[in-house]
Length: 128
Image: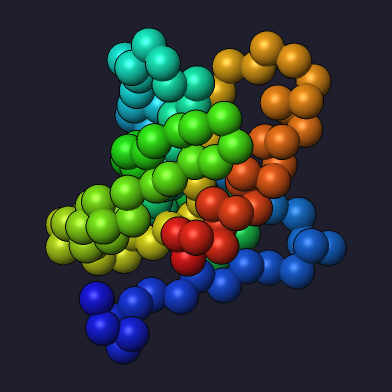
């Protein structure tokens, strides 16, 4: 995608109260992908698409999972897949932009829970 074709999502200041409206298809898709994940996969990582409505509500209308490989100390995302899926979605719904990322995983201890914040921040930087 050329830089002039990209849609920039602007967020409101933190002092503004935001709410989210998640369409049922998104919830079903996330649950389905988590249940169908490979046995060895502990996480499902993906992209949330939608828009920010004039009243500040984040309207999450679509999502897709981004394939990845995990090792004990890192997660490698298929960025080409992410970009291709985003491009395909925007051909059908050009007003949908990335409104967030999804990360769903099984916790087995507190250390993994603490590390999740690090993964989410790296995911934001990596996919942006």
